Amino acid sequence: MDKINKVILNETEIELQYKKKKGIILLRKSDNLIFVSGHGPEDQVTGIPLYCGRIGKELTPEEGYLAARECGIIILGALKDTLGSFERIERVVRAFGMVNCEGADNDLEGIMDGFSDVMTEVLEERGYHARTVMGTHNLPNNNIPVEIEVIVSVRG
Image 1 (cartoon, rainbow, N blue to C red):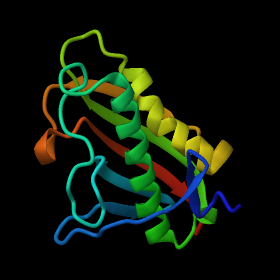
Image 2 (cartoon, helix red, strand yellow; image 1 turned 180 degrees about the vertical axis):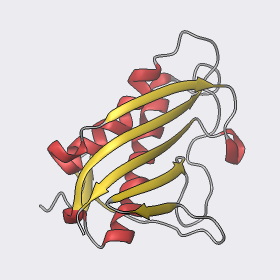
Image 3 (tube, rainbow, N blue to C red; image 1 turned 90 degrees about the vertical axis):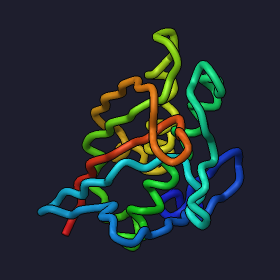
Image 4 (cartoon, helix red, strand yellow; image 1 turned 180 degrees about the horizontal axis):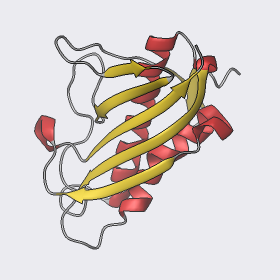
């Protein structure tokens, strides 16, 4: 199976989909870098959040991990849509994640691992990245639990 153009989740191939939004620059290429705006776990056809609420209140850390994985899948779809395939990606340089959480006892790093795991599963060595994660008390689109932005270096 070609891991470059598909994501495998629970042994099921998932075709990457990405919904373009009017009036918003979701990706910006500058020289050999692509800056990906913050993406949440939202259905790319309807725009409806797949997860809503704060980790530690409405959602568990495990659900937060899955929401972060979904962000990774959506970002991969955006990159594939922009580049045509993942072969042009040199590496994921940096990821910045915001986790919508209740209190200070949530495993922010463990939640963000959902995103990082998808990057390395699909891109292997090229998916390893520098990362910052912070907790917050509110995120857009019906209070999504995670929002992630990324910087990726590309060839050509």
